[in-house]
Image (cartoon, rainbow, N blue to C red):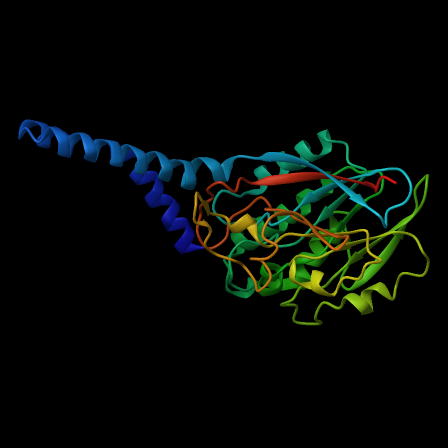
Amino acid sequence: MAGPGMLLVLAWVGAVLGPIVCAFMIRRLFRGRRIFLASSLGVIAALGWGLGVWAFLIEPATLTVRHVTVESAQWRGPPLRIGVISDTHVAAPHMDVARIERLVVRMNAERPDVVVLLGDYAGGHEPAALRARPEQSKILRGVEAFRGLSAPLGVHAVLGNHDSWYDDAAISAALTRAGVRVLDNRAERIARPGGAFWVAGLADMHSPRQPPTVSGTLRDVTDAAPIIVLTHWPDPFLDVPDRVALTLAGHTHCGQVNLPLLGRLVHASAMSERWACGLYDEGGRKLFVTGGVGVSILPVRFRAPPEIVIVTLRAAKA
C-alpha cells in the first residue's frame, strides 16, 4: 500500500502548496509585464489544481446512493429491493473501518429486502503473510463491520480477486463471523411471501481453489423459482443462461477515471470494456455492474463516484 498511500500524501502536498507556488510564479510574470502568459498560466494552473484536488481528495471520499429498476421476464412475484455493495478495498487509500460502518448505516436506511456483497473487501495486492499485523487487523475488522447490515432476507456474498490474493479463507471466515452467507459456486433458495427465489454466487476468477462455474453452480437450483446470480467479475455473464432473472457484478470501478470525450481508459478485465458500468440487456438477459466504493492501484476517482446501489427487481410488464 506504500505506492497508493504515497500518491495520496503527494496529492495533499500539492493541494496545499500548489496555489502558493503558482501564485509566486504568476506574480513574477506580471512583474515582467507578461500579462497574457501570466493569465493563461493562472487559468491552466487553477483548472489543473481543481481537477486534481477533486479526483484525488474529494470524489473518492464521497458516497452516492444509486437507485436502479430492472424489469425481467424471468422474475415472478412482488418486486425485490436488493442492496448492492462492492469493492470496499479496506486498507487502501480513502477506506477504513469507520467508513465501512458509515456506509452500513446508509445502506440500512434504504431498508433493502436483501443485501449482496460482491467482493474485493481487502485493499492492496499483497498476500496477508506479507502485511503488517495492524493492516491485517484493519482489513478483517472492516469485513466484520458488515455484521451491522440489516435485511429481512439476509446478507449474501461472493469473493473478489483482491480477496484471493490476500487470503480468501480468512476473508470468508470474517464474513461468516459477520453473519454473511458466502456463496462460492453455490446457490441458496430464499423463501419469501409471494414466491421464493434463488441466489447463486460464483467463485472468484483468481480463486486458488476453484474457477467460477455457472453451469455447476446452477445445478444447485432444484425448482423453477427465479434466480439472481452474484459474481465479482462481469466476465462470467457470457455463460449465464436466459433462465436467470438478473446478474450482479462489480470489479470494474466504472473505470475509476471516466474522462470527457475519451471515456474510460482502463478496463479491469477482458469483458469490463463491454460491461463497464450500469445496466445491460443482452437479448433479455439482465446484467448490472456497480462501480463499488473503494479505489485500487491509484487513489483516484473522476466521474466515477463511489456508490452503493438499491436495485429494484420486478417482473416485466405484459
